Image (cartoon, rainbow, N blue to C red; front, side, top):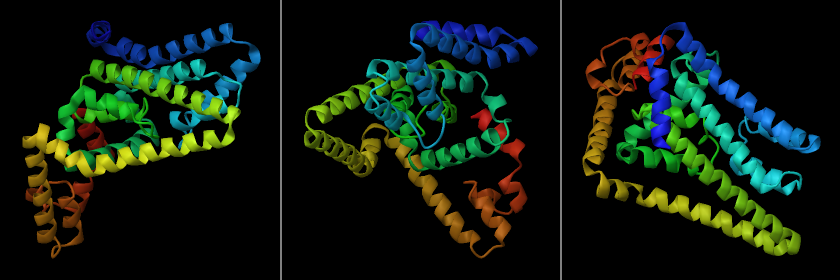
Length: 295
């Protein structure tokens, strides 16, 4: 699979000029149209209408696979074996668009200038505090996709992948594997709980409580052992992160007596630039876009 994806991206990389831009922009939409047409031909009319409704809801925050799949199955109209691959394909097509048109997506009003900037800023802060996570590379990004939380789908994942310097083919492979595992796991679990509800409502409620407890337990373990994992597998990256945090703290103390514009310079993570003006530190949208693209 990785070889096929690699050949596809090599072909796209060899294209140049307007043809490359048009092809990169159009191919995800063409594939989406073919996918929807296939569903229309294979499904009965009522099922197709309901399914496309769930597909549309999937694009509206804070909806995600962890909510859309259980609701679709609980409705009794969409089986688990249908909703799982459909949402996985949506993730894959969204990721394909982002990987092929990352620079172009930055210029889309609101999405590029506001939403992507927020995601990148939050991601930068996260990786500065936990630089060892970069060492997991493709595996870590795949796990990120598998996590059943809103914001771990086909739009956000390529942005995170670009930030840690992953090539497009590796990002796509992570999204494909992660989305399939995540969607099918949630679908099978939801179907099992749904059948328990039909058999005995209280047993179904107990199952939901146990699943919620397991998720909370995993989150608790992650919060308490993530630094220990980093120290064990990536000690050098952990040292870099600690030194970076200390540098930011000392920079913040030095700048507290300075003017307010200088304070914004320190947040850029470079103490040597603390004498620059606030306008330079915040930067224009174009400067931010160029920085993201370079990442």
